[in-house]
Image 1 (cartoon, rainbow, N blue to C red):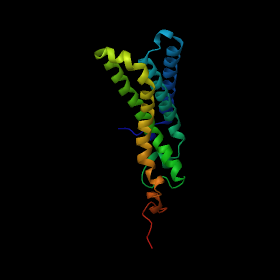
Image 2 (cartoon, one colour):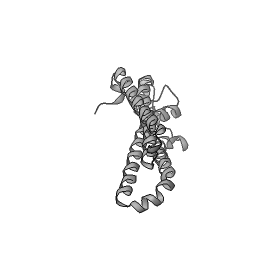
Image 3 (cartoon, rainbow, N blue to C red):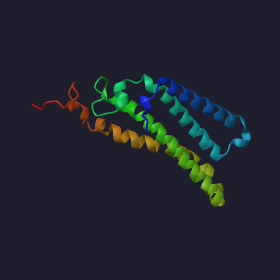
Image 4 (cartoon, helix red, strand yellow):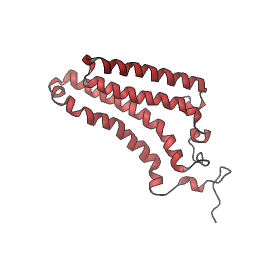
Length: 170
C-alpha cells in the first residue's frame, strides 16, 4: 500500500482536482433538478461534500510539514502538539465520514427495497440524524483516540528528545 505522503505532488493535485470537479458536477445536477430531491440523493450530496473535502485534503497533503506526514511518535516536535494531532486526524476523519455515508446509503436503499412501508414512514424524519451521524461519529472516534492525551494532559511527545530517542529521566 502506497502512503499518501510518498506520492508525487502532481498525482495528488490531479486526483484531488478531478475528485472536486466530479463531485461539484454531481452536486449541481442534484440541486438543479427538482425530481432528484430524494432521501438517497440527499445522502449522495452529503457524500459528495465529504469526497470533495477528501480531494481538497489530498491536494493539501504536500503542503503539510513532513514531520506531520510521517505520523510517528516523535513526528510532531517542530509544531505544537494540538496542531499536529488535528492535522494528522483530518484525513482519517474525512475518509471515515465518506465510508459512513456509503453505509447510510446502503441501509437507506435496503429499507427502500425490502421494507417499503418503513421507508415511507421514516425516511424524511431520519435523514438529518443519519447525515449528522455520518459526520459526527467518525469524528468523535478519530479525534477521541488521537486527542485524548491532550484532554488528560499526558503528552507522549514530552518524553522524546531532539535526537529522536527518549529523553533521559533525572
